[in-house]
Length: 543
Image (cartoon, rainbow, N blue to C red; front, side):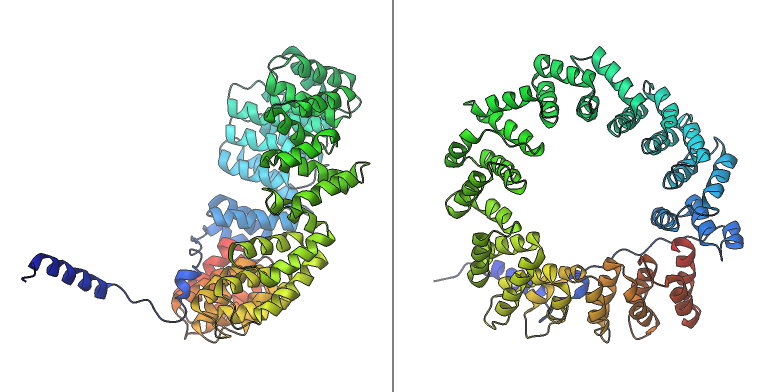
């Protein structure tokens, strides 16, 4: 029998393609693919005036950088100025710069307004400047000033907000109205008066933000009367919002209204009533609880469970019945809400939930174990740390599958990072005879270990994989404990240039420790070249 040459040719081509495919490296996959580095930090040459006056003054350097730095440099400046605080010369310097700018540079003005807003709220000069900027011709500056005025304690802040409430620009108008609503919620009498006037004049279609804050006008009969009117006369959405506000104010009519909603045959109003009651931390409708649990409709049972937990947490007279129903749901393996309710009981140290979780950690695999691990992580506290001990015991099983090993490592890294650091780092480095899947599966846990993980990784920077893991974890954790190790990586000429650059960038990204001193020391030890120049630019762009 003669074989057709076409299929043979096709098979030959396919085999050729297979041999041309890149081989997968044996053992641990390349760290660059599994644990990618952050992109290099942007650096630009600072202007001459900054070089002249900012070398020894971090405040001036940070303020100047607002005008010429990139986005990441801007964030670094804002963070630093916030940490420095407004003692001494910072506030006068910012006010002086705003006065000098006038109306000519709205972008820079908006940045300085943000710096000013993070300062003291009791300085009359600050409030005057914020009011002045709220009346700016620039939309950007106006909105930034309005956001700042919302949080000022002085009632005179309304002088900047009020003129913008009817602004023709909808963006400005929205920010102004949000600022007014926030001030009214915090007890500003003038803001409350303005909102009451507007809601009364447009009760059939009020601003929703204004409607929501009415409940915060304590002991204000006019606000209560408006809420009652809208609850009875408004459309479905407005009515529900108004009734919710009244329920939070312990209004008897609102309580009766939501009791009626719970007694309805329609599923939707029952769910809405339960959601409002749970968010208001009000317990009601006990006569229908059992029926809702038995119907096993997940949206209803979950919203009911939220309210039952309120009853248990606050010691409500209905707490025993609420506890019984929660246990009934949790102990029914066929109930669609058993996992969520068991999680909630575990968070509250319920004995049955603790014993169930203990048994699951010893025996569950795959997706079921993932649910249990997530429950323990969310639970926190001493009980979760006890569960971490069980996880460590199971991790000692040499026959444990990779997927379970990674899941249990996730549990111990979240719950007891100090104890887990050595294990997770050894897994990440390919120790303990673990597979590449385990090594790469625990890489995202290194950040979770925090400073203790960074310290443990310091001992692994002798080879490239360990150094890369250390540098990338240090960049994510941002703790000053990484400084000696980062300096060592930068100065080690045996490492690739990209890794040394990455370590150099990571130094300026830390949030504590002697970053400036270490950066200067590292730069002085580097030969003249690209890395040394980059160290200089990093100082000006980020420190």
